[in-house]
Amino acid sequence: MSNWDAIVLNQKDQIATALINASAGQTLRVKAGESISEITVNEDIPLCHKFAVTKIAAGTAINKYGETIGAASSDIEIGHHVHVHNLKSLRAINN
Amino acid sequence: MSKTRDSFDGYVRPDGSVGVRNHLLVLSITGLTGPTARRISNALPGSVIVDYLYDGGPVGEDRKAQERALLGLALNPNVGAVLLISSNPPRSDAMTEKISATGKLVECLTLDDCGHDALVLTERGIQAGERLAEEIGALERVSSPISSLYVAMECGRSDPSSGLVANPLMGLISDRLVDAGARAIIGESVEWLGAEHLLANRASTPELAQSILDAVCAKEQAAIDVGIDLTGNNPGPTNIAAGLSTIEEKSLGNVAKSGSRPIQSLVGWAEVPKGPGFHLMDAPAYAPESLTGFSASGSQLIMFSTGVGNSFVNSIAPTIKISGNPETCARLEQQLDFKCSSVFVGDKSLEEAAEDLFDTMLDIASGAETWGEKMEEGGEAFARMGPSI
Image 1 (cartoon, rainbow over the protein chains, first blue to last red):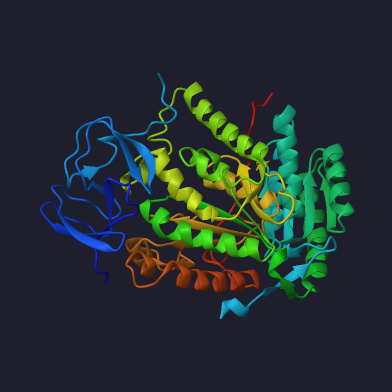
Image 2 (cartoon, rainbow over the protein chains, first blue to last red):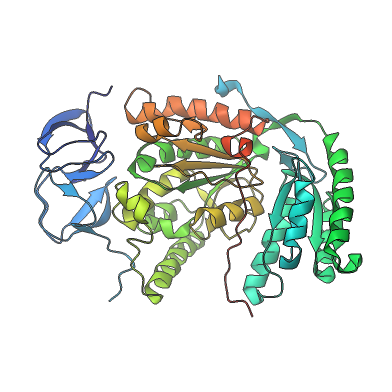
């Protein structure tokens, strides 16, 4: 098996993708570039889902692959699940 | 090993195109004749049925797109012969003439010529189909260059593993096909939203770059005009449960299938991309319609990545199912034609897996059956661009 449990795809990203099904309280080995650091997740993070690797303020654009995938709709703490409840698309918005 | 492989075994057609399959296509181009055409196809083992549900309804640009798609399916290099079934003689006569002009074997039967008797049409259809099947049955595969391939890259029921593994892997295959002088394409243009700048930057001309941006803008406006929130539609509920949060995230994963080579053209649904290289199709994202857009534009093969699993395949172009999600690879052992979870867990590099996938693709091009072919999955769905009148 792998030497890491989650991966940050680009140095501009504030989120990592879980490569395992992680449980709340679990400490994950997070690969970012060549370095691996540890982050404890505060919620269950299912396989392939995202969690914050830095604190993200509400309204901030969130990056994955080094590109914007939407904006935080509330403040997000390190180790928290980042998904449709706190990450909103910036495209095709109905005013 | 595949580094030295520069050919596959295919069926050379009179117009010089090369098929990876040698189908007898029973093509019903009118809604009335669909059930009869199905009866005919059922009596002809190995034949492929395409049962178009409309006739007089589509008008204007929509009508043009429908006719382009029907003719395109008939002209797909994987089709050795066409048995055209219709209740509209002027339309089927015109189409027969166009198919025949390419040198392809075609026979046309209409309900009108059979006294409007569906059972007479059934009997004559089986007889005609049997003759065509025998004729194309004598054809043999010959070694053909990779440059004669036109491969479409699709994704469906995606999850974040698609953008991490299977789609970048297909991107490497796209690049390799382009470098060999072949054609490759992606469609699903709503899933360029948020990644359109990456595609536009690769356009071969500034005009094409603008067309790509305009196409995405039109899709975005269409979503706004009907008042839907893309989240919940695309990404859909299955994508969201699997971890995709927004259209931007999905798109950035999606366009990884396109590799890195320059983009040569932007075509419409079911429109043939001209010349070698990488192309884009501005077309619906839902897999059945998207795949028909590709097969009707002449794709002989489709690579199809999936996150949680997607069984749907095209009926004319063998569809290679690929996943990098380790849970999906374990759960869908048979349904997946290529599993690459070893890349997901870090045991294999993308480049190593691309070697294996290229080999698998050439094996399938040369006759190895996909899961979808073994199970006789597959169908065609015609995208509608306007109302029926």
